[in-house]
Image (cartoon, rainbow, N blue to C red):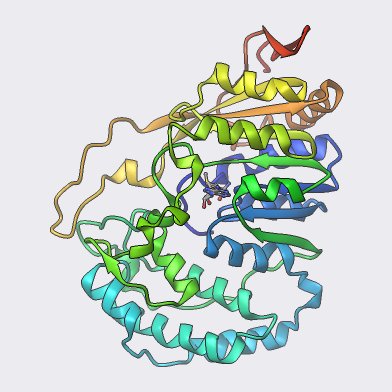
Length: 383
Ligand SMILES: C[S@@+](CC[C@H](N)C(=O)[O-])C[C@H]1O[C@@H](n2cnc3c(N)ncnc32)[C@H](O)[C@@H]1O
């Protein structure tokens, strides 16, 4: 699975247990990113709608969420991947910009990306294999990149993996239907639902995914944009249309409250962490509009860039990493019976699994539910 800031690799089993605990047969993953969570919900049998603004995320969702593995000719797919793997490299825009002017991949692998991406456009643009072979290429590039996970700065030395030859693999498709939507969550929310379960995992700070993952954005769009800066970011990064309400301290809390309030779902799970602009109290208050609220907290390692440190092209460290761990927080909200049912199922299924780490429920407190009403948020610690 690809490296992604804020990816919920360690929380996937928890989220999926919460969904199964409320018997979800329909679900939405509103900031789907890598589609990890959406994939797990689909694996569980739910019809999932995956939403994100990123073009690469849409393609990942088309591959893993909306493609039904039964509808794909596996032999044709294997042949397509084999043919693409056999193409000799040819230097083009990608090599020049991302391997010579910046250092995302080694130039020999960049030349393979150039030729394979052109071939995908020529041969598969109108085929149902298109998002699948694109996903395969994106994942292949990620396996041999020379980053700490972000496409904004560089490792001091080429990463050892970057010397490996770029090689496409057949993505592991999932059985069943699903839906992929590229849209702002605030707009998409009106057309999603009703669903049994919704997972909301917005960005928590000013770091924009559009710039952090600009190489993927260009790899998928294949539009050879003008670029600027040491990382060769797309010039349209400067356009307001590529900005998100969820990346601004001023707009994020209201934007999230808007989506939490309007999503047509029975149980809603909202992710935040202790570095977010939304503190625990505010999160509870926001979710209380939907009924009962429980908070789960997980001690967690921060993203890999924080562990290694970030360097510029000359190998100098860029900035200082202040801390290496944080607390991931899940607010589970909705009708009391469903929320408690979800928590019980989670408790049964994953309490002993390695994923969980330390966790607690919020201390009991009273929170307003609306005019004249109160509800409880959380209870005693789960053991
Ligand atoms: C914390 S990441 C989600 C990670 C994801 N849960 C995973 O496990 O891979 C936040 C995601 O929100 C997306 N995003 C940012 N602004 C958005 C918006 N206004 N509407 C929908 N998605 C948005 C970003 O592209 C990014 O993929």
